[in-house]
Amino acid sequence: MKNFILVSVLMSLIFSSSLFAKTVPYFKGQKEYLKKCRSCHQGSRYFVNQYTIECWENIMINSGEKLVSLHSEIKAKDKEELQGIEEIQEYFKGDRYEKRFKYIKAFVLRFAKDGDKNPNNTEDKKRCP
Image 1 (cartoon, helix red, strand yellow):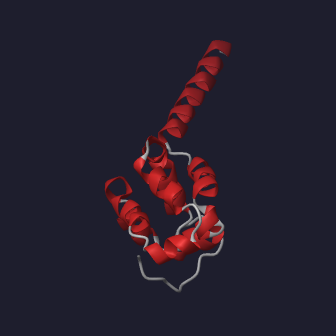
Image 2: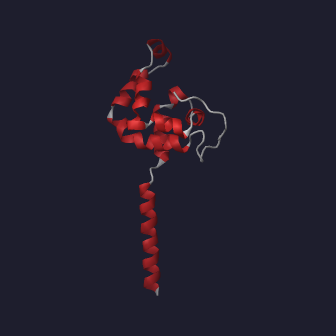
Image 3: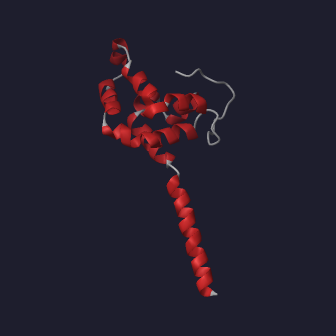
């Protein structure tokens, strides 16, 4: 009887840990946002929940091609206002962005305007960029 209970507990631990391993940890995306994006886009609480899940999914298609192009199309006059924009543009061309993209995507989708985990879930919708 003890062996049966032990095996049952071990099986449930293995099963639950495999389910956890399949989910992408959004908090790593939040950490990346705070390191790389907060200086221009304010806190994630204000920026991420401006757009709906549908908008964020459109922005994140093909490893975030639209996200990269939005940051690469910043005009010269905006560069004067935004300090360090060259570093940000280099970030999107580098390996760090590619490695952390899935975490960033999980983060913005989880806390999108109409996301179930958004504490500021409101009805007004901002147009997608």
